[in-house]
Length: 300
Image (cartoon, rainbow, N blue to C red; front, side, top):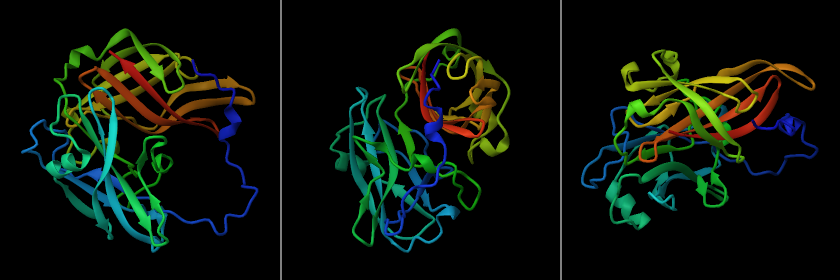
């Protein structure tokens, strides 16, 4: 179980310095266009890949933006990564962009796509000042992960990336068990009980173009964070992303200075059908305190 000793480091505080003169950035969301392909084909002569870029309502003015770009982050079956800007010159939002997979492969320097390969697309941008802000770096990973609670005009949450994977066959019956191993970003490990459920998430959590029949529900129980944690997620079999609704995972957890519910918010995830793992990313909250971002991977 993860220690909560660093609890108060996530509390919001007034900054002790003036932010005047700080350069303002732009939050850009990316999503798959409903009706386009959601998974990556190993045939580079096929595929209808289309993404939508938009700016959330909380952003307000973004006149400081020169243009936006789309970066492709490629991960091969051995988990080695490389990246390249594959679309540039985007100046208006919302906008839909067709992805030419052959052009993407050429810019990444890859000759073929194999089962287990993944390409993620993330927004980048250039400010009129000349400052370049990339959506991913080898050292820092993905950018803008702290803005997933922001909303677009249609009410959908901001997303900092979309993922396309060349999947191996999905064997639904494998994704359950009484003692399934897990690991967390911080290196904690243990086992959880995973049960498949018929329950479906609330409608607002189901992506456009996805039906309830496309979802595989999982109930996960174990001593991961607060002890006696229980949460529910849904595998979206159209693209093998994971729906992780905001939810209370443990009620009445007591730790100085009080007793509060443990919650997870702003969650997302993905399935690796080749390795048969499910990985979740989310933000954790205990009462009025924020515990920060975490990641858990379950190995079936």
